[in-house]
Length: 604
Image (cartoon, rainbow, N blue to C red; front, top):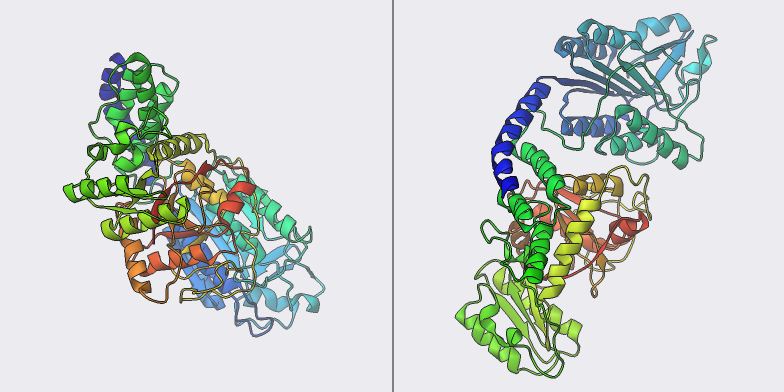
């Protein structure tokens, strides 16, 4: 019991320390100036405006206050640079991003406004913006970290006119505390790109969202990705004199406006779990549960306490503050006997929250023929569903889950199938998921897997696809954000994980740890389709604190519209943090990441 006393005394003190440190960190401002020029009078470009908007969204996501200018003239660029400098402060972080045409003259780099007419070399300094002007603003502000990103190495129509210019941009020596990043090596050029974003910026957007990478590692990841995808034709470059560490997204990120209590508790939970995770004392594991009854490792802690209690004949874990039944289903300690039903199967009172009509239905289930199943809602008293006389066991499972989902409008579990209890499969799923999630580490995989980032040339669509589900999908989904394996790994490895929704059709399969398998969530029915969408929204609503909670939807692969449809349905239901894991099960498996055997949670 000593550890429990120490935890109760120590955690509030540690929380105050964490909040105090984080509050100091929150005082440091992140300011960015983002410019995207595409509508040039000569040499118009395809992607810079898209690139600038995407960078603005990503930087805002990571706590930057962003000044955005699109298709800017020279006066507009100069005014934006001046405003940028005025907002910078000593000790803060300054970031400048430019996508568009750039030119070098005698070793100096100039960024070209959209209205520029460059007829001769002497006109360059008069009609363009010198990159040194940006560095001067950063230097005057004495920012701790300065980052300059120049996606301005495209094949420039002006360069061929002048003797003093060269292809691409010239290498610049980065002043102290500065990193200068180029889309390609000095003197070389980069392609504008054929997709929504340029190749360099597309890789950059993915890398800066990956948690736990220092800024140098971010650009190293970008270089590797661009080089691989361009077959070595384009090699990004950096010049750096940074003297401290900088992360776009830390493993335990605090919000830009200041840390929340949740972020502090996440750090505390990890510290306490590290102290007890190898313990053979039920009291020490219970100390963790007392502090974090709904914590990341609570299912694993309860399972271990129950195992200790079974060995010693002692009471199991405390029920105070326990998770809902889906996280701690009842465990049948004896295997079912084929010739006789164990008493626990026949005992309807053993099902938590089952109403009197439910118990009567359970008796009818017991009396039914083969291929029957009984499902119960995990929310207490929410409902049940059952079926009998199906052609096979799988059909019985889907029918019972459908009946339960429709009546309870919440997550359900198959309690019994034919002669056997199924609760042990949910216990196994919770245990394996907790173990797999605890083993996840960022940085263990890099790159992309199984076509998850492949552009099939299919445009995104607002309407749900009603046929041909297993076909090539778009790269993006309206109202949701496409997420890739490395970023998803980071989100799942963090303490506050999102809700995972598996929409795969078919039978039991290997899935991502902790994923709720909502079979049929992506199917489109000729009749009652709106009802299916509304029901999916209700079921998901029972799993999240609010519609701002991140929800990640996936199915088998990038050739599966079921997840596209389900994600789109959640967007239309008002969920505003929907992520589409396009690569799905195949990408996760190809990355060598841990998987678990699925259990049904809902059927539509």
